[in-house]
Length: 100
Image 1 (cartoon, rainbow, N blue to C red):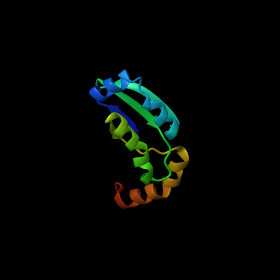
Image 2: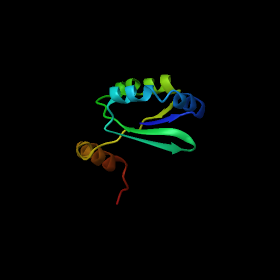
Image 3: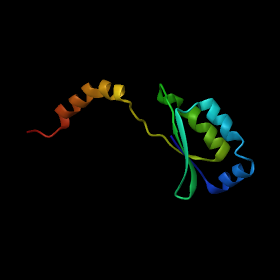
């Protein structure tokens, strides 16, 4: 999940020592968290595990509310997930792949 904090909200948070960020991170327990400046804005790249898409609001809302952040969520698979997806990929290839 990419969290982009607008400059004004980020400046206000910086003046407060980003006091809410440690609490949010402690609650969400990301597998990894990286902080960068992207396109001139404070940005966090959080690697989180969700069992169900309905969990997305629980991860996004704290960032929306605390930092007026923009969120991008990109699903990803580990190797085991990709292996489980094999039959669906094969079926798509049969239906829509190039015919030889």
